[in-house]
Amino acid sequence: MSRWQQRGSDYRRSRRGARHRSIILTGIALVSVLGALGILLVISGLRDWRRSSASADWPSIEAEITSSKLVKRFIPSGTASSGGVRYVREISFRYSVGGREYTSDSTLPVKAAPPVNADPSWEPNSSMDSGQRLTVRYDPLDPRSVVVYPEQAPAAPVAILAGAVLAILCSLFVLVLRPWLGKAGS
Image 1 (cartoon, helix red, strand yellow):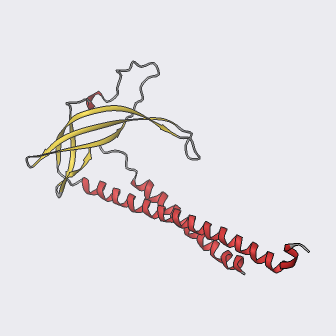
Image 2 (image 1 turned 90 degrees about the vertical axis):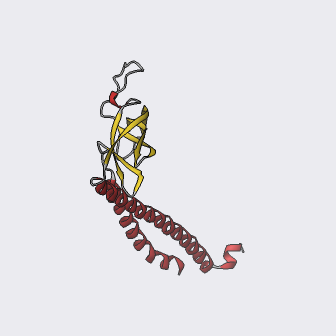
Image 3 (image 1 turned 45 degrees about the vertical axis):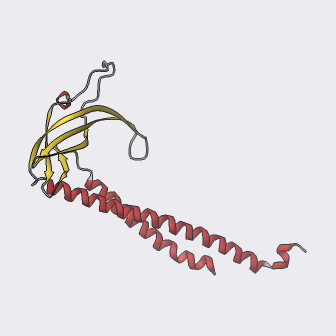
């Protein structure tokens, strides 16, 4: 008689149920982590949106660009995009508020990509060279917090929507998996 025959068919069913139970518990844990990430994305989007809205009333000041460079960023292809290349300008600048000097960095979108056979010195937004002036808005309560104008395209509503959808879908998935947990254990 084999070992499986000695233990009987009830043992095999309970072992199989226990295995499925651990798979369902792992799935619930992973989906819960994804749901928590969705909630964090919503919180981050709300914070950015609030800051963007508040910055409209902040005082503005002229800042001097200390460094500026064009950066090529690669966008991987996926379900939402076909991939490609995006150019951004990374700038560092300094400004003074109340006699105290501050420095900050920012990334600005570049509207025009360099031509295919452009010489290496070609750069769009030539007004963004070192030594040029730039208008920024600063938080009067914390002058280290600045927003560069012209305002960058706000990604906050996209983050809020994506995070909310992710959190809701994950919550629904956990609600669907929980009854299976009881079935797998019995």
